Image 1 (cartoon, one colour):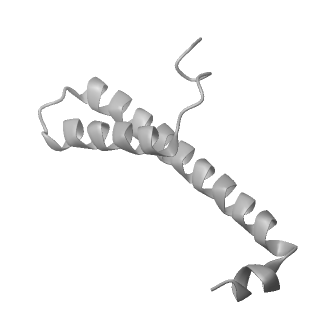
Image 2 (image 1 turned 90 degrees about the vertical axis):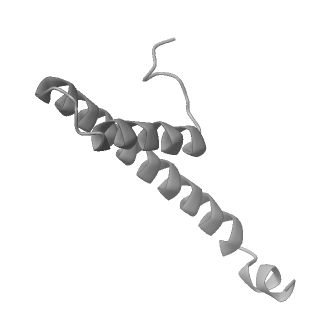
Length: 74
């Protein structure tokens, strides 16, 4: 299975993004490597945003029907 086809978790994507940022912050990358790292960072950032949006939609769906009951349990 290819790296992109593999389903990843939000936490794994964030960890990978943090590693990319740390490598780039060192400042000693050749330009081409820095561009590739930047592209990977953008891809990971978008993946994280999509995962968060999907989670938000699931929570909205789960609480929409019984919102009064859900809030009353507090």
